[in-house]
Length: 87
Image 1 (spheres, rainbow, N blue to C red):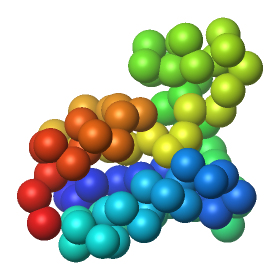
Image 2: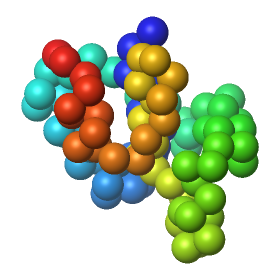
Image 3: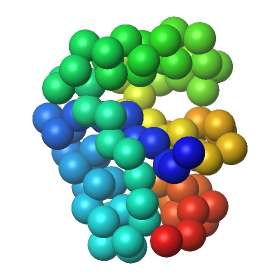
């Protein structure tokens, strides 16, 4: 399994993250939840059950871009992704 990025092209932070991943030649799967109800359901399942999103939800934010590393770790931190993932 590769790096997975959850997001939408309507989000400037997601667009930026995707540009960075492409510029660094990092292979990833982009699950844009505005393109697919299945992708939205997959993201919401994570968001509803993972403690990572607790603070995000309190702040009224969505929690994207969200990254799932190859080992299953979830993060909202692009810098952490860049540290952990090699092109």
